[in-house]
Image 1: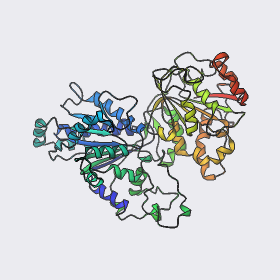
Image 2 (image 1 turned 90 degrees about the horizontal axis):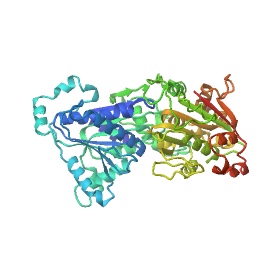
Image 3 (image 1 turned 120 degrees about the vertical axis):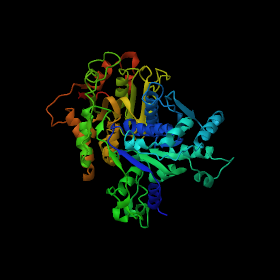
Image 4 (image 1 turned 30 degrees about the vertical axis):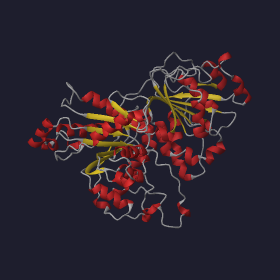
Length: 562
């Protein structure tokens, strides 16, 4: 049986399939996925049904973001005097990696800890309750309409007699989900066949599906019940699964025949009739199902509620216009108030009116996978952010991430003198682009990292990737600061296919007044030494010698804001 027929069989067994799709911040997670999960939970509670939900995603960042949104909505909408005041027995469970901040109304389970064995057994009992009146589940769009009126007298009577029917929503990655399923399968040491024959999940929800490989999605569907529901959310203009294949060198039947290398989101788009295969010709795709008969409802989202129109307009012009999506923001221009009054060099960034800033520099020494200039500029800016803010630093390279982690406190329990300059601890996340997809921070700082022109050309397919830049520029809610060498902005790819993708940097620099074709000047411009001096990196507090001996001083620095 092919993957296509396996997935088609899964589709035929679904009562409802919903695919929320949209650009960053449009509410795929907070305004669509989380309410969809809780709407189903509340309906089950109202009709006296138990409900088992598995929520998964490719990364813990994405899962924790959805968990936090779901927990917040559950707290605000259920209980006496709240919109849904019917008695409920809804429990949110986080399995696997523990979030840095665990909501109070969430149960955390580490199945590897003996101390959590009792929790595993208790949740297993909830999942195996199997309390169903036979009332068919309905889609989110039918709540509050005629569909909701189908709760007949029998269902209402069942609800009164079984208002404690357990409703359990489990949040976990796919590998942890499989391990957890092994733990709750009856028997002392169940084998794989016994695990896969379980019937547990009524709803399967997959977030950030553009990064989720189709075999992993099918793996998550293990123990999925007949007539269950599937929710899939994602944006095909964000990062796909990490893969590389030289199709021209393949001489035998390969993955192109099943398209198993596609992300879950792109596979579903393919089944809906969208031509999503570019590098591998569609004629190599073998599907034994009737694609025209596959009905996959698509909810296309177009408005962001994360950041203002300054970035939304940039991404609409350079990315989403290709799909005909009129991407826009529903928010007024954002503002960010600093912790303390900043010096002249960074005052334009923290003036209360700026939501996007660009810091460029012309280094005297080229850098590749780690960059001390961007590191020290990043530290200089973090000291002015509010300690109540969540801060994110994103970089394309692990080497630079490691350098930043050795110098910047990432939590309120870290030592404040971790780096060159004392920075009071705050909630700071430092990650590569892949790990940031699905996440959000109040303040985001993008480190371009590479400044060596020859290395930029060698890595242009990676560094200038449109989906990668899209994710990097859209994780903030209040302030975005882009720190990048002039050599990246001015780079002209030798590969014509990469020129359009590199245009994001050109349009960004033009919007902020950095581009030579724009009749504008920087908000502040001087050399790196002056920048360091103004931000407190002088005298005994900073080892200026390494910067001098390594040829980093002088290097020009310019600040542009929007």
